[in-house]
Length: 114
Image (tube, rainbow, N blue to C red; front, side, top):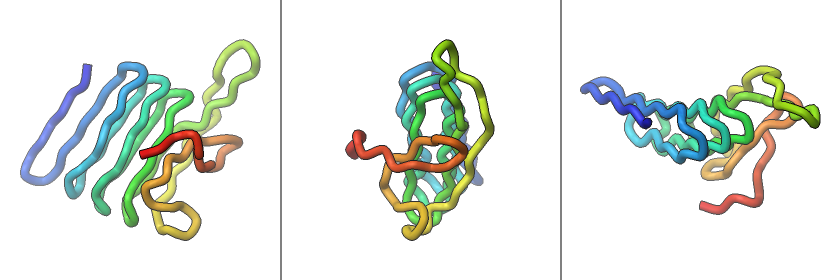
């Protein structure tokens, strides 16, 4: 189930389903997915894309924030290692580029298009 709450000050979109695609499009908005294999985007410079499920990816426009859980697969199961947070600045973190985590760092995922 995907939930959405909009006020005059912010918009929040949330889903705990697996394999979802969410977008934070408004100023002061957040898109949060907790299910595995999620794709979450921040499409406004004052928005946040947050993916907490394993094997998930995030992307955003310049100025937006990316929050993504770092999971490690040990051959038997996924183990939560922490969270990586970064602002899209077009230097270290490129705009409109999908990122995943590995070893506590953001990595570009070249297998995903727009």
